[in-house]
Image (cartoon, rainbow, N blue to C red):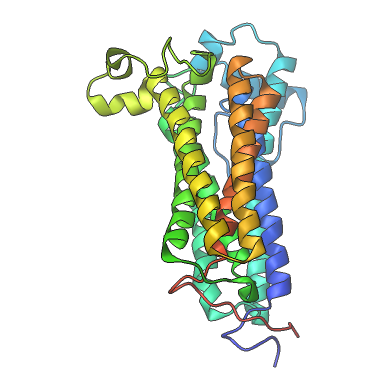
Length: 356
């Protein structure tokens, strides 16, 4: 009989495959950040999931793509007079971002089907992996939904859709990291319930913070209020400046001051909880790896805060902004790893076997 028993997973090959997928998701997030920072996201105005992988190859094809771009508001109101060579720069960023998304789909589904055929993926892992593939397909549709928001009436994409698109990518990445981490049952430890809850809570807070950061990016809110620790002249801005939009909820998404203020306050909250978590971990759990994760999270959170402040004070230079985004992904990774190390009731038990 080819393969292994249906209830068991060939951990080595499956784990290596998922790590490659996770690395590609990170690459896509970074390229996506560069695409946003270079205002490249609207350079390709059509969604062609299959044929779109082939870029323009002749002068006539390049001219045709450029003519399509000239029809949208971003060109008319922001980039009027742009040369073809300048257009090619922003085109290649967006093209690379879309191609990476397609590559992730192929790198995921082909080995997945092969592993299923060989019987290397146990029952407990099949549906989570099918769910990841479905989320990846949804993410591609969300990407086009985001781009389409900037093709008719806006000069940039909707910050609502941008934030959702980036956060969904991070959720997919976090799910992959969680699955990979849970493939080492011997490393799973017991801990007080409060620490297990806090670890999961930190994962949620980091994802919320990533969402808030994407709103900041979508509104270009990092280009204003470039002071710290004060914002708009005070530690806490005046209420009439924070809440002037109606209805009130719109301030959380459309008021640049409120969005940036919320992003700052969330950073402070995460740091405070992380400090308590590391302190409680040090006195309640003897496992060195668990303690190391908690300490590392605090250290990275401090570094991330410094990078974020510097990015703001220097007017959001591209490389510094990308470093800030990369650090957010690293923080999310550590948060997921420290949550996954605990024994969780109802979590899939991945049984390791050797593939045949």
